[in-house]
Image (cartoon, rainbow, N blue to C red):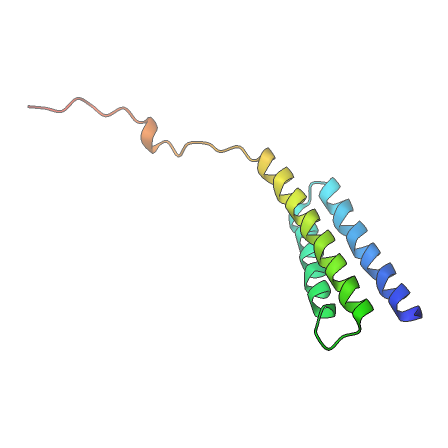
Length: 96
């Protein structure tokens, strides 16, 4: 099937664009690429679609989900959580 091969090539290009963005630290564009692929995979995995398309859709969703999980894991490990300062204040002693 020529069309399926073309779809696979397009999907591979979008995955590569997402990986390239993630490698450059551009989390939001990478997330958009992988989220779009998840949606595309879901669109292929419909009950009225050919079995080969449904299987391809599931594979795309699974791979995109894995990439999103890795992206979030990398992004969250780089985030520093700083205290707001509210609990760092020293209150003056209470007056009697």
